[in-house]
Image 1 (spheres, one colour):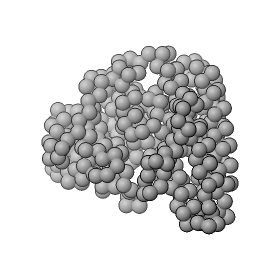
Image 2 (cartoon, helix red, strand yellow):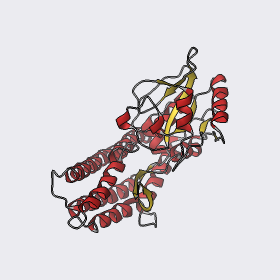
Image 3 (cartoon, one colour):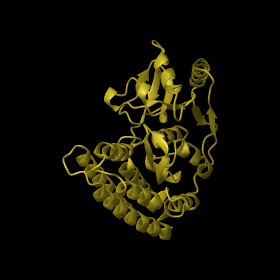
Image 4 (cartoon, one colour):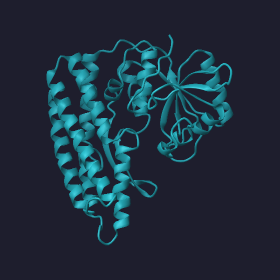
Length: 330
């Protein structure tokens, strides 16, 4: 089957949707994201990025890849390597066998990514589907790029073996066998209920709706008058994690809304379609929060963290009501 590149909103869900389509199962990015129960929220003050707390709007890297295995009866093989030479040799072998191979990389070292969009993030997923016969460059499908691209072996090796947090260690992954026919009536409600548990029931106060409120409390503790620079750094980190890294908080809400629309049709539940519209509105609230944050950082509005915490609490209230309604709908 000839490989077809597809543009996507998020790398991991885009890669998995492409892999599944390549193995005969029609799959949208939204379905891959929702079926793996990837939507979440986490405020993780003990995990630092550039000395500032991590804020996440989805489950951790590799969750989508691993989370699709059980519902789809999918067997994935994962391989890491001790040296770049071993990783390159194995990739070449798999491509020679005609396989399409997923890879974890550092987006910073991929030369086809515009320089102003590169940052040190070691969990960017791409697909390799062949090599150029003349140059030996790899043929890559990067979901965040509009068209398929090529990448020299040295550049790809550097991206696959980058050091630091979430170091990929040359990770390759691919299905061992084709997925079965999904039992939508069973697996979709189960996946939706799992997402509602993450957002509503996790006992840790830094996860789900509780995590959004905990982040709002952190905004209230910022000293805008006494330490304006530190305050801007903190809220800037939050908006950067929301809008620049891994699709963004609003973007993940929009993807999940598309998943609910597909699930509504497959399950014959019109209420899920209505709830998808509500989630799009909540995603718009996240975008408005990001805009308000950016305006404060750039001194276009007064630096008032309490105004931002108020927006976060309203979002938390809306998400709590939404996920309760979603739970009742399935």
